[in-house]
Image 1 (cartoon, helix red, strand yellow):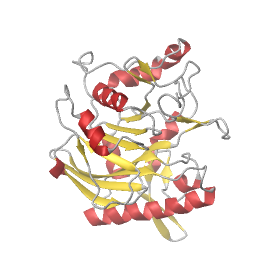
Image 2 (tube, rainbow, N blue to C red):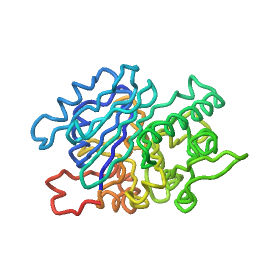
Image 3 (cartoon, rainbow, N blue to C red):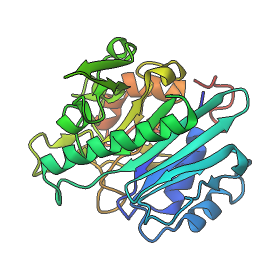
Image 4 (cartoon, rainbow, N blue to C red):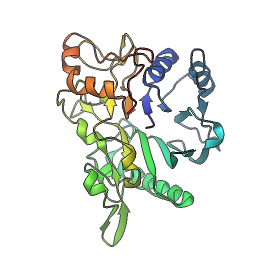
Length: 306
């Protein structure tokens, strides 16, 4: 099963942390936003420094659209083709032997600090249209959307039919589409609904903002087309809180926004040992001032991949 990692670096996280978290989780596809001074060549060079065993490639855009999202893949370049690029979304067509092909859309939408709610919703309508256009090009809807939407799962742009039409239920998503006012809208499944509230998990979401209504916000999301849902195990998506001995959260359980990033990384799907820790042990870890301690590949030897 492929492992995706998305992280909004907040222009602060170091290349060392990126490399460590990728190695710790044996990540296949890395999607980054707000990389700041870390250019794609610098990140790729660090990812490929010893002892990395398989080279990572930057899935370069076919046009310079001022891309805010960068994708790095652990496959041969010829297996990943550029499909669509704007400054807010980059789409790649992955053709992996023995695993079929699919579309990966990396997204970083405009912040609420600079955009009204109605503007965000309108842009989601445009985003949904762009995704459908790329699906028509490749002739299928095996699509995964990963990134910082700067909206919560229940907001109109994400959940509304004219927008991304992302629903909380796999059963509903499996219907394929719904018809609203004589227009058909294809579903996306949003597993991040499972992360609302602590439910034994610390932290409950990926982004904390003191001046927002809900304080904790699930802006970073993974959305999956029904045709691609069988590739993911239910409840296997986790929010990373540690990289080795480096905690990404404070003793109060909040992102270390000044030292690391104001966003926490999103791992999908997580290795089985991390899922177990995330489900059962995070609250106790947090009380001791830390998060889930990720094991290294050597420590994880023999653990079955999810």
